[in-house]
Length: 505
Ligand code: ATP
Image (cartoon, rainbow, N blue to C red):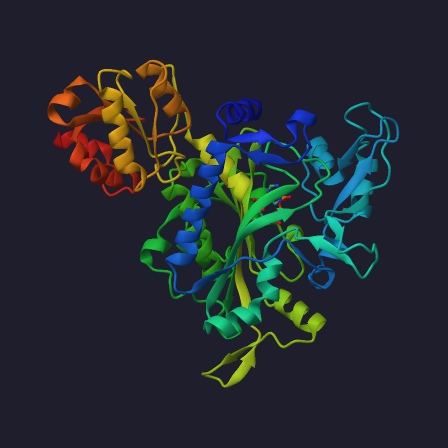
């Protein structure tokens, strides 16, 4: 499925709509429809459950979208959160200079200064891809959305919409420590909206101006930055596809590597970083994404911020090529130190063992885009088989877990089906449907990824049993109504597979 097909599929099924569409659309902004809002909620809840609720060493916060401009000055965003721009002198088309150079020469120049890009443009004779016109000099364009607080437009009242959720974790760090008494090592997680005034939003919801992020900052004692106590043999032997900096320099493709090799080969600077890369890579896999479509990409030296240790992305094989869904860097103590200096407040924690205050080190900053993750799940789940289209979503992600149909909406079948619906509705996300033929109802359910459909037929009235149909195989089992909830629960939460029920029946 290409991106246009994906966008029209999402529109038709109520997953994602263009924002302000009735007024011609607003570039870089998208809205979730009823189906998409539910899938997104399920995805975000699963992330929070896995990385916050189930862990004693991670706590969550939920910060404001707008913060004082002091925050963004200290973090460096006001001065340097920018993309390089060029304009065509003839047709006035505005483009990201690094992307243009990459498209024209295949050379990766992200992170290079405007001067270097100007010389490449001159050397390689790069002109406007639309009209062939010559280009202006490259200049930096700040991506921060600015706003004013209150009625007076002044420097003092200037504030910014956050371009990432992470900084709020640093500014609230001390309050989290004081209120929760967390001891190092521990993480602080946050899920929320972020805003970037992207020069050219594109690739459906891959690059937008408003998007969601799921982030963690993981803090350790600076003396314990290497060894992660959670890495065991099972994790060390986990295999995944990795594109190292070496591969990229040599123009080679990725190779399979274990987490152990990632650490021992010196690719991941610390065990901690490797541990968290494993955690998030495996999160996608556990929720059904084919690991062949995922890989880790090590950042090249010139992509790294001056304070960062090693950094890896998780990339997905999108229709437009491999691209980033998630980034994770070892940030050292850069952010806490910057905020400590700028605010004049001590942000260290007390180390009881050594009886001293230390500034913790961030060994891992997993940052995952919500829209890009959703694209991964949708792309990977979209299946066309024997003329049937279905979304092979993990039942936990599915917008509705089960639809309940009467074979025909008459002869008491509808009443019975409604009774079953009412008995399940409080406990699991189910829907009742009776319009159209049973085949059409199955097709509509398949299309949005409903994993199971219950049909009430004439036998139900005799023996109180119904059929449950499995979306992926279209196989059916017959189940006693009294046992329906338990069976559905097992199926949806992965305690038992449909095949196991089928074998038993
Ligand atoms: P890119 O290089 O693609 O611009 P980035 O490296 O600037 O991304 P980060 O700052 O590392 O991105 O942000 C972390 C995550 O937030 C990304 O991996 C991505 O999933 C998501 N993200 C960042 N920018 C956007 C955007 N404009 N639209 C949608 N998601 C985004």
